[in-house]
Image: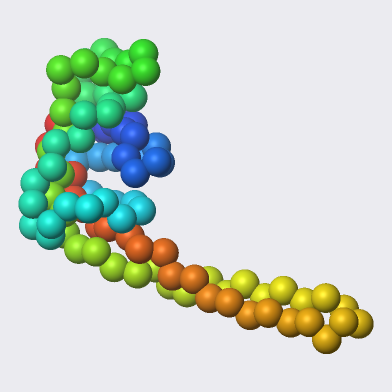
Length: 104
C-alpha cells in the first residue's frame, strides 16, 4: 500500500502520489512557483488510517511545483452533412499545466 491522495484541481479529481508528475487544464500560476493544494478529498498514508473529507479535509495541504505550460495534441473535429456539400474541419489544442507533487 502506498501513500496517495485524491485532490480536486482545475475542475478535475486526480489520484496523486508523491514525486509524480501530473497534467491538468491550465492554472494561471508562474512556472517554477510552489503551490499548496488545499482541496483534498481523501488522504491515505502508510501505517495510518484513511482520512476522508466531507467534502474536503481541513488543515491538510499538498505541496506542488508548477513545471510548465503547454498545448495538448491537436484534436480534429470533422462535421459533414451528406448530400448537402457541407463540410467543416476544425482543430483544437487544449492549454495544459504540468506539475510535480512534492510531499503531503
